[in-house]
Length: 234
Image (tube, rainbow, N blue to C red; front, side, top):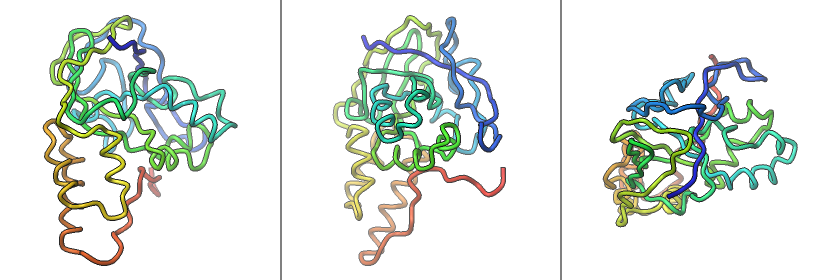
């Protein structure tokens, strides 16, 4: 059993831009329903890039906060579990410990690892720290999203338990390392894209990159921003 803390939050304005975000979270005070859209009462501001069945619940490894505080010391006092908008904080897991498609039990619900988080420019705004989102992506400190494969109630006292480890799949750390390669082998990309349980949107991006590399054997790849950049208009 893996100890965790659960968080939810409502939409609120960011301190610098004033744009709405669901990043501000507080510990879950009572049992709540976990369904296909996430934890009951949790909100996401920009549904284009947050929320939905393949981004229902976000887990962020608590150990990453130490590295972030070292890199951005001016924000250290703010870098606490829950402050990056995660629904689950966990000190015992990292991207190296979970595999694409693995299933965990949480209370009555079952959750499946389906993709890493793609950091958003709102992280920089939240902490007034330019470059934090880019650093999270480059250092592979992303955390990951679960989809809810069996809805149910969970309480603040519940723990995570692995019920299907997806032993044949790559870990998220291995997947992120592959995607950061300059020109990864298309066969390796297609292998990652074929993992059972992978999020459809992530699968599509990986497959498109494999196809591009197969047809463009020379020359640089098109720029692929490692995080969600700030749109020019709200």
